[in-house]
Amino acid sequence: MKIAVLGAGSWGSVLGSMLADNGNEVVLFGNNEEVNQEINDYHTNDHYMKDWQLNETTRATGDLSQALDGAALVLFVLPTQAIRSVAKNVGKILIQTGSKPLLVTATKGIEPGTKKLISDILSEEIYPNDQDKIVAISGPSHAESVAQKDLTAISCASTSSSNAQQVQQIFSNDYFRLYTNDDLVGVEVAGAVKNVIAIAAGILVGKHYGDDAKAALMTRGLAEVTRLGVNYFCAQPMTFSGLAGIGDLIVTCTSVNSRNWRCGKQLGEGKSLDYVLENMGQVVEGATTVKAVYELCQEKQIDMPISEAIYRVMYENCNVDDEITKMMGRSPKQEIRL
Image (tube, rainbow, N blue to C red; front, side, top):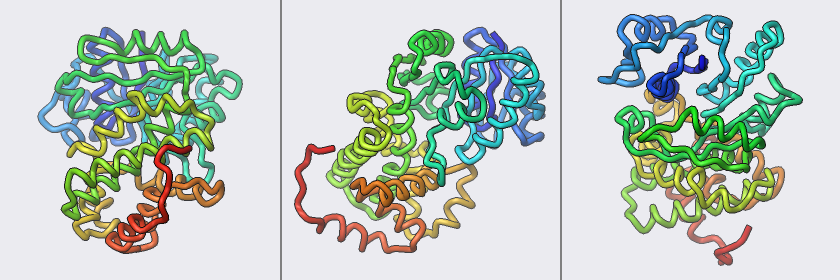
């Protein structure tokens, strides 16, 4: 089938190339004409993925209508802040053409202000009456690893089991395996909020804390992600024990390929947030998501001390050591609670 991949960064390029390897016609849409030209002429994308080549049949374009023309599946791999504006344009084009492609999101974020998940945005802007045509893929996966065909397993979630199964079949191959899940919001919350915890994990490394601290951070971080997912988004608790939850949390909190982890490490080393974001070269999703998470914590009185501390460090210039001291000095709590 023809697949339109919206987003020609590292993850969009790797997923698009993999889908082409799986036998599909793939067109990447991106707003950087130099990147598009490089993909078309040399089958490379050196700005995002050095020393790697895309499948030679993949094409790139800056024309959204051209990318969508005839596509049976549209894959969103854009930064969270770009999703709504692009989705509006996709919706207008699909109304004109009468096309009803399956929508898949690989973006992991929560929209600040609205606190909407990506599936909510796609539903509002494209399919207000057809949310079952939206599928989210999320789990422990880095573009660099999938590009090298490392063994990868992720979740594939939708309110429609048949659509989840269809995406499962389209994406799966001998190194990339998808498991279906009917908890769409849970999979999305897990994928988004673990980026905030990954920033915290990076900070601990930057401050030279050891394995005990990292293990405690990931475990209590998972508790926070679960608490938000269940209490605000009505997600299923077991989702957070799966690939989209603990699986993605582990890889993002421990891998140098994680931009969120690298961001945190530099913050822990004393660099300013402005410096880190300007020099990262790609979007740090957790830096945006933490704003939405903090707003939810305040509005709904959800106990998320790690996430709140990361927000204060990033946006209120609070001292990392002071925040750690405050967290370790909190009143005693029961461990297992929602």
